[in-house]
Structure formats: structure tokens, C-alpha cells
Image (cartoon, rainbow, N blue to C red; front, side):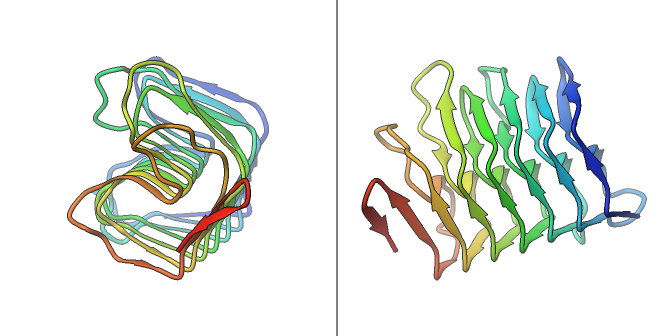
Length: 193
């Protein structure tokens, strides 16, 4: 399935899970989904798995390519299994390539500038220049590229303030030591490589 040169500038709201600016839930059971040359400036909100482009990407060959978001993305569920992402709320395998977000992101946990919760996806050639806000609790899985996960981050950049004690500029809660290559974070004059 292909979503090509598509856009949304409205409001997308759900009280449950898997809400996205263009696609809510790609289950992976009917083949891979590819989203290319698309964007969203929408205000997206969900209980969990809220994404600027897609809420939940589950297909092993899913791909988001040359797409971008602004607007806002908000998740509200405190008992987090997934959170909010500027491009993808939660990705089981779907890669994000040559994309960016300048969205305002908020939620209690697992908030990432590109992907909120990243299971096995590769995030490559992306950048984030938006904001991250923790709405409650003390969770530290907030970061400019991925909030939590074990996917790879390659040739990526984030410029945002992140004041949470255990959050980082690129990946907040790292699981299983994912690859992180040529990735940078700028925060008021300091950089991590």
C-alpha cells in the first residue's frame, strides 16, 4: 500500500491508541505500507501511539520516506507501552528515512522527535527541531530522535532542549544498545556525538 504526496492540516483526535496525522494503524497483515513525499501540520492526540504521520507501524517492510511534520502530537496514557513521535508513535519494524519534524510533542512517557517507541526500525537521515514536554510523572524516555527503543539511528540530528534528568538528546531509554552512527544533538551550545 502506498501513501504518496498526501497531506493533512486538520485535527486528528482519538481517546484510544494508534492515531496518526495520515495513518492510524498499519497492521502489517495486508502487506507493507510505504508513505512517501507526504506531510502533516495537524494537531494529533491519542491515548498512546500518537504519531505525526502514523500512529503504529507494525509491518516488517513498512517505510516512511521523505516526509515531514509540524503541528503538535500528544499522548495522554500514563501507563505507557508506547507514546508520541513526531513521525511515528510506535514502530515495530517500519523504517523512517530522509524525514524531519518540527512538531511540539508532549506526553507522560516515550516521547521522541521522530519515533516515540522504536522496536526494531532503522531511523536514517532525519532531523528534529521541535519541542518535548513531559506532562506528568518522572519517566525519562524523552529524546530528539527516539524516546525509547532498540532500533538503529544513523546520520541523524536533533536540536531541542531536554531537561529531564535521564533523558538524552538522541535516544531517551535505550534498550539492547542500538547502533548510533553519525548522530548529533545540539542543546544550547553543547553537543553529544
